[in-house]
Length: 346
Ligand SMILES: [Zn+2]
Image (cartoon, rainbow, N blue to C red):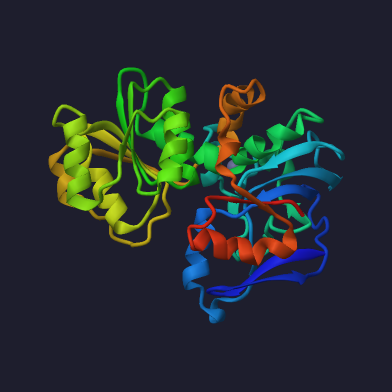
């Protein structure tokens, strides 16, 4: 089959690779209907060393089940499914707590992990199919597919940032980052009833979309100026809930410093440093630091009805569609900030 293989930084190729197949009785094989390129794919795109080994990329998809192993009971051949970015067995104590990304069997697709493939491909083997996959209604309106695809990562991840930061009615929310996750964070904050939603971002076309999604204020400044501006907008104190959707040190620092005393920061940007910035600011501000890899599998029950009835339209974050041969240029376009989020239609 055809798949997207990253060999090293800025070296992404569409290649023929061996077809995946059922390996364990709990596996399913899915044919990819839609996949996409994630902002987090850009980290290896900028830094992967050839010595780290080539990997099939992609961790977000919706697909159709082609085949299931003998012990798979709820997922059936022909089902349209969401593939969350991590696999999960569905039965361990963390899965039962709704924290599937901490499953004792969790693994992250498209990350070069042993035995796990990637979704920017024609097909993918899914371990623990009953726990990992989520069955969608059959034959949804094609116009809904982009939004359904966001359930695999960005919408659930933005929602996790909002939930862990305590966004809700009467709260002021600041969203650090105007990428797809930040924009979905705005949707989530609005959906949870936040009163004020401030997005920090510098790309006008993205912050314009954020306003359509429910942002009430845009802060285009960075660093100290951004912190001052958020405080001005929040009666001098900062935001109750801060969604950190970038992961780079300056963004984490800003997120902590725009939080109001006693507030919370929900981190969903993959951290780029071992040491977390803002230690003193978070301590002296009594700031709760929360977040992590989003258990998007747990959130689909909540978010899916709002997508199906059109209440939320997270699929609007996609501004380009490519086939598998177009994926390498899709990486370039996202890295050059020419595209916000690229959908892949194999
Ligand atoms: Zn589990």
